[in-house]
Length: 165
Image (tube, rainbow, N blue to C red; front, side, top):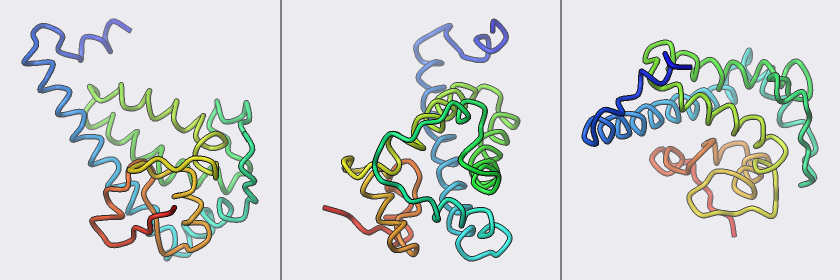
């Protein structure tokens, strides 16, 4: 753990502020990559074969957490590979390229474990700017919109955003 903490510049305020800005930039790059892998998963047959399983699950808005989420298993092998190819591998690549981004990987893990059943498909959630709940469910109704996984930024930039009420 000491080695991981040594990657974060706690020595002075300016260094730490720059580090936080770099983390924000790294997160933007990560969300850009996951946005495009999600879009590609809808039009490239090998990825669609995996991603289609995610769209076939009937989400009812109940808390659907499974202890298997803790080890990276999501409903079935196709959904699991979908998550690993479109989200886990890009995050792993980011951390391999820049080890100091490991706090993003920790937050990503927590989000991935909880979001599957708690936020992503919860029709009671509609937080402006965030791509979860009703916003993500809209993607399940019309698979040509709302590809973002975290914030609604890339949908807005690339014209695939459909707001929900």
